[in-house]
Image (cartoon, rainbow, N blue to C red):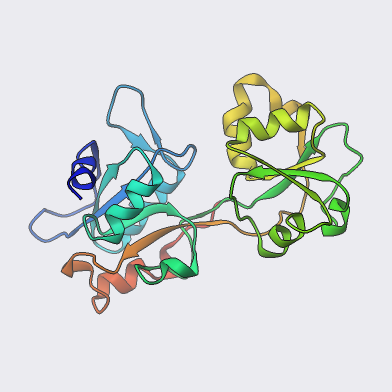
Length: 246
């Protein structure tokens, strides 16, 4: 526990809202650096990204401010929120086993829209159904859960599953010809690969596999100012203040 609390002090960044400290509650939020959702400038405490922009809009809409605690790992960020050191965590996937510790809103902060990605010389032009994966090698990030039916299919004997630790490794597998498809968020792939001009060598198949929402999860042990029965809590959990990713 002492290590966990000390970890909360590693890096603290603040996203300011409106109003004074006397009348505007502050939502403490743990997070990790996960571009392009959450990014931190080298050598500074400036934190930004798609999830941060959405969070700032949300808390301002609901009449609050946000203090962001950047941690070195997802487990640290998750545990800090779970035990009430902070009030919430971003960005996180919805999972039923987390409902014992968190309240999830109806809609996510952003949607990463996972898709199948192929080489530009692939004969596949669209995602017409799971049947195109039959007998093929499909690479995903380790332990990634992208879409229920897709996840079940690639973990069956219909396709060969290849798991790699990050998006860069996935693209290496694809460009080398060791796999036929990779499944990931195009936003993540293109962000990591733009400088190497790899996007010119890959193609994203439409339509996407489904939705992959990244949520602000509110801890059930959050501060009284954000308790479940408060108006501000209902606002934070309302889908009307969330912006879907374009």
